[in-house]
Length: 65
Image (cartoon, rainbow, N blue to C red):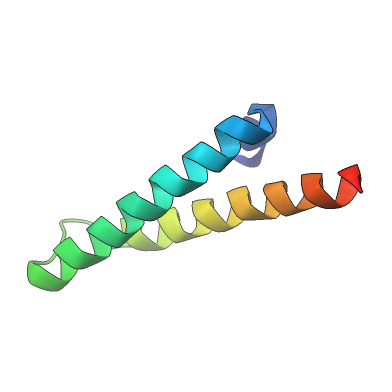
């Protein structure tokens, strides 16, 4: 997910999306520990997407103060 797409989301949608992506990330890591994924680079990409979303949430929080 690109930063432009993240900025288009509302704050509520963004929070829900972060929770869903974190759950997906944890499940992916667990599955990879049991049997290797076809593309383990997906884990890194998902981690970076989560970081982008959290960064945008934090920026919105700071701008509203």
